Image (tube, rainbow, N blue to C red):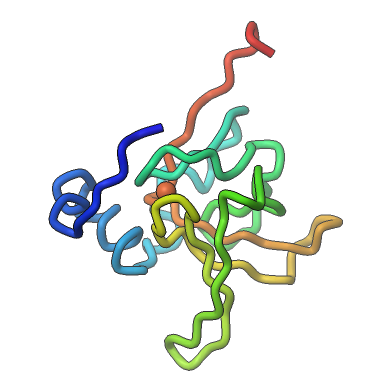
Length: 135
Ligand code: FE
């Protein structure tokens, strides 16, 4: 687990400008531009801010939205859900519970049995490929 910065100044130093605007300022990366929306490799997606494990590749699906989409978190305890009333919409914001970083939003229109669609910014994630020999 990486050390968590304790001021916005420190976050600014640690993160890229894109990561900072999304994780700390609740921004959204443009659709179809992130590095993970097409990623189909097996592994774990961690928080780009603090390294907490957030999503498994096995729960990722192609939503067609241009953002990485998952039908459940790896561990519900690592995720925080908050009502978000910005931009005249009522949405559910998804945050990393450990560092408070903004990840994306949760929708209930998913195509898989869970019915959930975690719509997550690539910028908020760090992918770790799984090592088959260790499984
Ligand atoms: Fe985090």
